[in-house]
Length: 525
Image 1: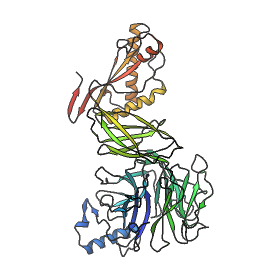
Image 2 (image 1 turned 45 degrees about the horizontal axis):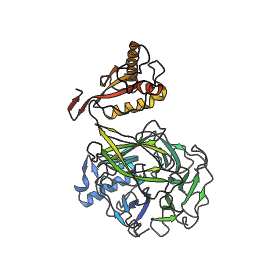
Image 3 (image 1 turned 90 degrees about the horizontal axis):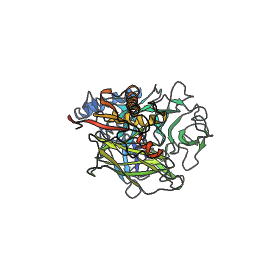
């Protein structure tokens, strides 16, 4: 790649490319312009020490990380900073070197992108008071082009017997592939899989087995956007020399069924070390690092014609009353999943993210004091979408006496027992109350006009109470935030003349009764 990215004296490694193929994140090693921020007890001693004392401090820190003496910290492999190259004319010619907190005097490197588009997975866990721990973190780009302090990823029973570690994340953000050495490894580094179990929480690493791993080193994994091809580097038998780049095809639905490994031919592989593959379907290029010309540089090779597997979505989050942009979170997930786990944080009311083709996705904006309107998007898998799709999401300012929109809630006939098919709707109501903890509601039960008036009144009261019990005992919503009332057949939506019209009158309405915004209490009148 171009000379702005590669240098003759220093190593450039770990290419990570944005979904649209227009931004390249890479790591530069041993460069003298590294970020000097070095926190100790919350203070930056990089600005307090003279140069000799600062270098001696770095020697001690790097030696502790390495487990052996490091004599020249500046040229050390632990002096790593993240650099960013952006395409203006399709050649990654705009290159920048971000400062703290994305970079500091400790090792910094990007491993993967999250599905949100504005988040990076970086190696190591950092403390704002200083120091680092083994593991990984997530940092987010804000609207003013700054980066948030990395938030740690928690992997159950995480341990690594080797200082060399790498990570890949699936396009939907639910799978991690890690390269590390553990007690159950076949030899040196093996590849492991982890599954998402909560916000920034992952299951214990599971060895991918002998079809993937050998007694040699398996490192730098990358998982294709469709989750079917696993790229990695290994020095196993059959390599041309040093490490070569291989790929496997997943042949089943689990993570133990794989094809035989395929080794890329020349010129991708060489008799030098070739590793850190990262394939981008939008450009059709495989990006990787190699020391075939001396120092480690970043290369690219065209594998196939451009065919983006994901579609880029760009839009605004708008207030329905003012039509102004609102900062908010965007929750999104495929239709059929109970919970909207993926989150995009917008600081300025704009967003840009990517969704895979072939699935229908739900998207909703969320902000305290507002109710979001859900949108659904589907992109055909047999189309090539080169243009960015535009989408506006809307937020309704919440007001007392307004209704919370819910999907229909169904009960057993003539009973106050909620049917299981309605649990998802009640779970969404619970999520709404958890996110908007200043809001109190009234649950109103309504019936049609068929039957004894007193019996209908009692049934509507019991159904409203049944919903409150679900929210309180299963979702742990504070009971004082919920009042219930039975309306019987007093407030029909129509004249009850047909079965279809009567079905619409058998309903539950949720009304906002109180909002406490920034200490100013609003109550219904």
